[in-house]
Structures are given as structure tokens and as C-alpha cells.
Length: 455
Image 1 (cartoon, rainbow, N blue to C red):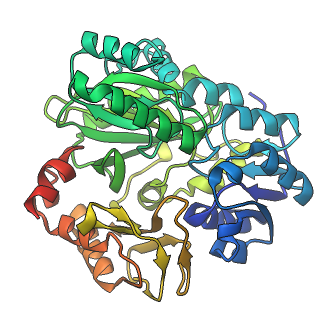
Image 2 (cartoon, rainbow, N blue to C red):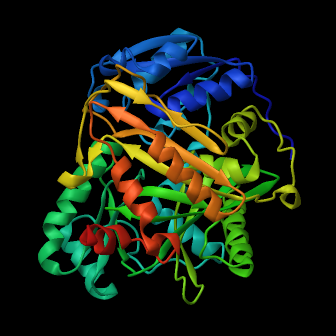
């Protein structure tokens, strides 16, 4: 299939933080200019300092800046940008924003608005997965309008259930509900959180499966060639937000790995997917059975572990696809080499139930050495704003095997010093010392139900 060639020379980055830095670097390596938008709270941010130009888009609250599609389109026009990269979160899975870009003659670096609407909406994505012959976790038939409708669905499925926002990701708009008494408050909380984070408070209900693993497949597709780049294990979570990711998954054998990759390819082909994306599965590590959970029609926070083990720059490939280029490799050429682990370093205090800890970074020492990569927007003197996600840095360690990757991660965390604010470094140090984690005897509730209770 002939792809539409769309020359991109200047990219507006409609995001902030470490992913904005990552996109700027990809643009510069491709010889493209990068224009950074920023709220008043991010005026002195590292992405603003690194970009070829910058535009203020409003006051600190994301609802008045990073979630304003009209302001972002105007900024792109002002900057004479050919394309907009949405990163992750904010408007990255907003079909209306992708459509507005298209109508304005601006390339949206991601899939089409139609695909985002069908796959970015998690309830719709479940129907599509079934059409593609991929099993899904039991759940409601579409969204539920209120707590009463949610209870009706939960009664049919059987408690416990998971309330999930149809838009966005990152664990926002998700609540585990174990009985009817919790439902009304949990529904209101999930809908409110989803509305604030993604501008869409729609909720659906899914059966909550106990002691499972979260495994996802990284995809790249130009419409003709559909590649899966292996899997990432994202089972170390807290309140449905990922804390640690690794590739390959210690829980998969070659048979399940092949089956899961083929299932992900079928889903992408079914919707003629173009761009980078991720198919997420729930895995029963005992039986090997897996179920489609959702698709993220964007770049993922944890993409670096896949880049480490495959040697493929996912951001650059995503931009090339947006320009109408064909992928230059075939599935047979994708090889997973070694093992990679990522720890998310957040401005949170683990001792106080991971309470957000904004403030000023008064001292900073980043780790380095063999097999270590740092993705961060942090610098000494940086003032962490209280308005956004608390992610400060991602520490990624690669080794020839999991044991070496873990050893390098332990070393990197011991070298890393962030003064002036509380961070999750002590939590990660504790996790990596835990024998259950070292043996990969974990599940998606491991942190809350086992690790934190033993501290």
C-alpha cells in the first residue's frame, strides 16, 4: 500500500517533562526542529531550554494549558509547525484533538482519529479484540452511565470488579471494588479523576482477576508491515500505576510469547493501525492463559526497556511512520538481546503512603556506567510543580541477563542522589532486595498486599 508522504520539518511538542525531552532528542537526531509548549509553571523547564523555540500556552492547571486543544493548534500555527507530537497522557489519546490537527493541516504523530476513537476507548477496544479473535477479560457491554448501572454489571460479573476509565491510562480513573458498599464512592472518584486527567469521565466495568501479571506488547505498524517488538512485564504496580517494568517478561515461555505477539498483531491489522502503540494483556502465569485488556494508541512511559533489548528507536520510527515512510525491518529481524529493567523515580514519599512531594531539587547526582540510561527533565535547582504527574526520572538498566540487569540497577540506585525532595528511590532499593521480586514471584497486587505490609 502506498503511504501518503508528508514532509515534516518542525514538530510542536504538546507535552512536558521527561517525554518532551525524549521527543526533542528524537527530532534533533532526525534533523527536525522541535518547538516546546509550556505552562507558566514550566517556564524554566529543561524541555524549554533544549527546544529550538517555545510558546507559553497558559496558566499551570492542565485544564487551562496542556488539555486545551484549541490553544495547542494555535501554537502550532504560530510556530509554523508541520506536526504535533502529543507524547503520553494529556491529549495523546484524544480523537477530537487528532481530528482537529488533521483539519488544520497539521500532522498528528500517532494513529488516525478514527483509530484512536475505536482503540483509545477501552470499551470499544474490547469489542474489536473479540472481532479479531483475541480473548478479553469479562466485563460490561460498553460504558456504564452511573453507579447503579455499574452495580448491575458487577452483579452479573461477580465482585470484585475493576472500574476503568475508557480514556487515557497511567492508572488514572481506575478503582478496585470488592462489594456494593464501595461502589458509589469508587465510581464517583474514578469518573472525577478520569475527567480531570483526560477530559472524559466515561467508565466501564471489568472483572477483577486476582494474582495475575500485566504483560504488554510493543507494536510498530506502517499499515503494511505490523511488528511486535516483544513484551514488557509491568506487574509491579501500586494503585494501578506502574512502578517497574522489564523486558522480556520472566513469566513467559517461548510458546506464550509467540501466541501473545501474534494476538497483538491480529488486533492491529484488524483496525489498520499506523504508528507506535501497545497492546496490554492480563496473564495467568500458572495456566499461561492471557486476555486482552486494552490498547494504548501512543508512546508508553516504559518504551526504553524495549529500545534497550531490541536496539530499535521507537520514537524515531513513530515520527518516520507519521511522515509516510515504510518500516525498514521485518518481524524476523526483531531480536530480543539481554534483559532491561526500568524504575520510575517519582517525587513521592513512600513513608507517607507515597504522598506527592513537590519542592526544589537542591542537589543532584545521576548514575551512569555500563548498561545505564537515564530519561529525565530534572536538573539541580529545578522546582517540581505540584500540578502534574510526579515522575522525575526513569532509570533503565540493561544486562546480558536478568541477574546482571538487576545488579546494574541496584548499583545505579545507590549512585543516584536527589536532595531537597522525597523520592521513591528507597522504595525501589527495598523492592530490588526482596527475594520474591528477585525470583519474579510477583503479581499486580504484590506491592500493596505483600511488599509494603512487610516493611
